[in-house]
Amino acid sequence: MKRVIIFLLGLLLYLNGGTCLAAGDPVSSLRPVNTYSIVARDPETGQLGVAVQSHWFSVGQLVPWAAAGVGAVATQSFVDVRYGRAGLELMSRGVPAAAALAQLLKADPTPGVRQVGMIDAQGRIAQHTGKQCIRYAGHRAGEDFAVQANLMVTQGVPEAMAAAYRQASGTLAQRMLAALDAAQAHGGDLRGRQSAAILVVRGERGKHPGDGRLVDLHIEDHPTPLQELRRLLTLNTAYRHMNLGDHALESDDIEGALVHYGQAQALVPGNVEMKFWHAVALVNAGRVSESLPLFTQIFYEDNDWRELVSRLVAAGLLQADPATTQRITGLGHEEEIP
Image 1: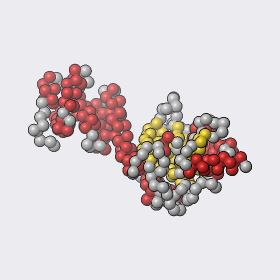
Image 2: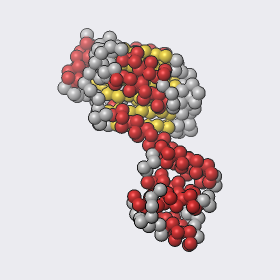
Image 3: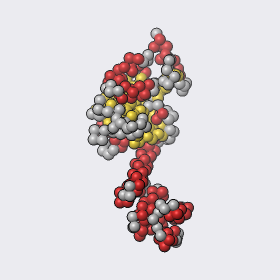
Image 4: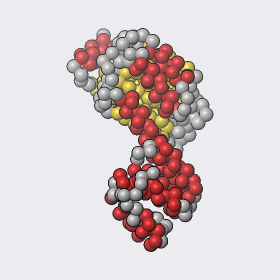
């Protein structure tokens, strides 16, 4: 009877768009985040990830959980965040995903409204779709991945996601996005789409809890969240190359920095800042002539970057003598843009 009362209360709150804290646990909530998601592990890198889309504001605050070298969790339907927090804690102690999920379900007064996907650092899968999840609901698993969905327009979404993930290439993040795209193409959430998120962590544990986070992107409210998520993923990759370029410069590896800056610029060719630091690295490598076309483009697009050249020289971060500095800052708008 107690379970029925709790479920009915949750259902009432669902219909009214509200939330409810589970009894005795102030950090757990009953929230109706009906959605579809994937948890996965890259067998080559060991990276672990979660990706999700839903017709619910800021789904990334509730559904995806991951810890480097530990595992990944997607907790959805009537969300109970304990499946994420406690699930990762159990797996961090060496408890396999299936045993961790079994413990959490046993302690849950309303497991029938939950949908959960878990994967541990060894690639072991655990899934649960409660009998009271709103149709169409189901899950599928494959080698090193698990997909789950509820409140879908039609049947077959988990199957479409699994097939897309198996056929996809690229990074773990790109393959997980392919699975989400397949879900949307198959009809997706009955209510439409609103938010999405993707979280990827390293395969090995770091010294601190926040170590090892490679991708952590949230689309809070957008008419086409997966499209926007893919755009941000490209930016995320480009800026990772920028950071690696900076680290290379700190080690006096000019050529390594140029490789990373070039890769970043190739991913986002219209980004002025990436062009600028690429040009700066070229000057510091003694390849001034190669930098000039980039500086010309930059100053044409935004003249304020011209002033930064002089400031970097003054700070000792741009290795340019007065003549070279004048050559760069004297580039005019009238020059032909390559």
